[in-house]
Image (cartoon, rainbow, N blue to C red; front, side):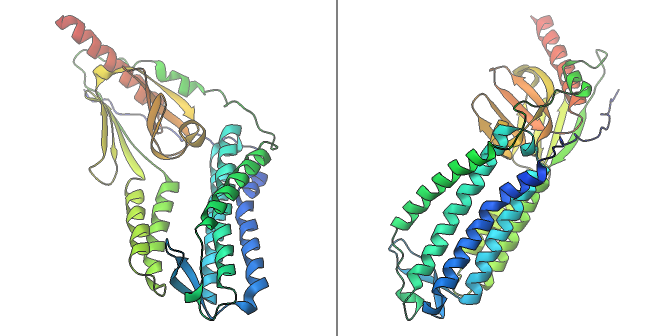
Length: 347
């Protein structure tokens, strides 16, 4: 007899009155970085050549050039897009509820903005006073300064995030989530399976954006093929791996890509101790999205919220964020018990 999984609604994101403030906090460093670089441009505009050096080699020599309009479009586009993504993350995830996740996010976005803003401004100063951008020099010590400034900005961002009043603990599990440690009543000869698709709009959007940016950079003057390929290929890979298929059956737990046949993760029943369902934070618990490995646990993390968590025989946990995880956990526990009973009977 086949037993199909019940459908369920997705987890609700915790609401918090400070979400708008948190979104502004996440986008603010990119606004500041853009304003700072625009201020440098306005200050030295009359001393800049018509052709600006926009890229420099390891020897500090200019090897890529762009006009004033192209430079400003690249500058504004980069900071606006990154600021929008940061605000989106703050609004659409549980960073607004879990303090550790918020501090980590804000530290990263402040560091990223500072690391980008310093070289952009420094490149303008390198072009100042030259007849042509080819004469500009960009010493590598600027990168060391950018790293130092980024570290300081990360600390300032984390400290600022600490001022936002947030609870330190997650909300308690709902009754449907606590039920994951239960069992499903199956006869000895009954066959049951559970299949569910899961995915991440964030990863899909990021992959598509990278691929589109790679195509767009083909039209940059003197852009070459390196930059377009370095954006397009990772973008296609991220988009292809942004969905996963989760299966529980007599073979155990299988997590495979929803669009391509590889990669595939399979945990056989004899390597599983138990399964339950938990509410997790993608950033606070696993440091991000995708296939994640942290001390003591790993997982396929598509979003924050409801997840199937499996305790493996080696003591480590494996998690996959998926809806209706309570049904999956109950069925997996039933199959694990039946496999253990069959092994004991053979002995």
